[in-house]
Image (cartoon, rainbow, N blue to C red):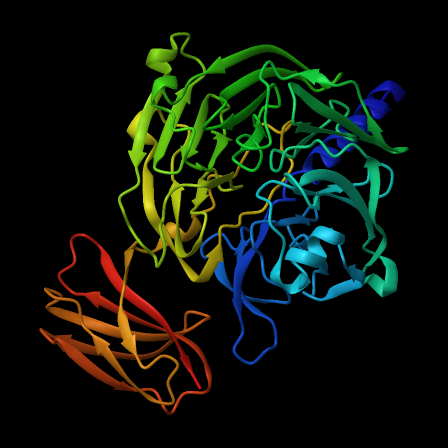
Length: 511
């Protein structure tokens, strides 16, 4: 007979394993995109589905667009539960949950951002966190702009609560836009969270327009405002607000905050007490070279092994080795922006560590491709940074989802067996001239010089190839697409002799 104490230990071990596993795949579904569908049925978006290990990225018709603000959460198997663009809440069927419109309502929104379908500004200003006491309830923490007729607008934080089992499993927002911290002194961006040491509750950190960092604890009884912590840096609305992000390390022991003007700040973090300590400031950009007249956006992210910090500063990507005590040796310039337009400036902006062990980096504006760090655990250039490395089904609006730091207590912080979108050859996009656009049928394509022999490919927004033809040293080509239905289509040219892996593309609207 098995001793009773062994049975108790086995039950406890199984419980801990299940608890830990339940955190494992909450970030497996990402939603982005902002182009309005031509037939008015929604928006042309795209979805990163990390359950589909060999083809993560695909087209997704989304009900509302995503401009910066984005958050989602999935179940223990990686299947989407709910997601939000900062104005609406959507369920696994991509439908609005009951009472799901109106997040961040207020005078500022009424004046400057009245249409909830157009998303909401803010780069790291929304989080979805599971209620520690009820598996069917989810908190949405979201920061709201507050309008002032004179002077700078300020920012406050609100909470909405979703019950995903209401309405026969379609979900309902039980309440929204409630205050739990009324002072309007929070910086835009920098909202981040991590599990408590007990693997049940949440710590939430948010810098303020001062030298303090707000700390909140979410437990089964609700949201608690804890004692302010020293930031060892005075942040200002004019430069610090909206200019960067903050991230916990994947092992949960450190917290990093970065912006171009205030530089990189790294702390030790105690997940049991929520306490920051051992502050260190690192000047990634030399102080005497900082341009305080120009608006510079930037972001920060950790490598999966919690050794390297990456900072993206518009035109520069740096890697900081936290194991190296000498800062002059710890900081390495990985790359500078190569000048690509796709169709707008493809400079560096927002970074997110994916569950596939890669770091994704999006430009700030609408773009048809994003950058990627393929091997972020490797030092220096071996991290394998690829500019414009991932072709998107449609335009992204400078948005990547904001997740709490997950898998902190798991041995594997990510899954390297996910092959990601690199199962196919990566190409670099350049603009293609196509007219008329929109068109009723016949289009003229201006073939770039020195293209030589090439293939013209017509695909729908799902990536399905509808037509393909070969050209050889053409300057102009006419193409009749009158037989295909109305909608958005990609016209692309792939040179055959293409050592630089460049393709030319333009999206056209068929009326």
